[in-house]
Length: 136
Image (tube, rainbow, N blue to C red; front, side):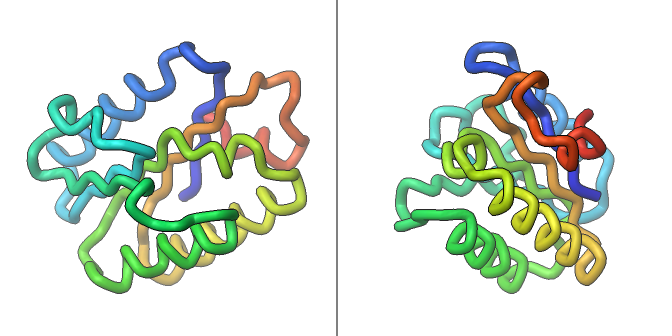
């Protein structure tokens, strides 16, 4: 499953994702990963959730970010949920690249059973049609 949380900056996407991640850590049998642009949320997340700060890596586009996610999964086959927040490369991606990225996440979901929740700083009025079916 691939899900997107949309909203403009300051609309509460991160808080919602933190709540979802903490709840999934409480209820899931597998591991939970929270990918963010910094370590500011470390005290808001359950200590059992792995927080990954993407600033430590040179991620320039969605293609390299997809490879990064594959690396995370390859290191831990017990991952059940990955939450992706604060990645401007997702919010600023061209529609064509975003659609390819989503299809790649769907393949990872089918192959490894990992559920993805991704935040995107866009309003619902400016999203492409293909993204609407992924909104929660």
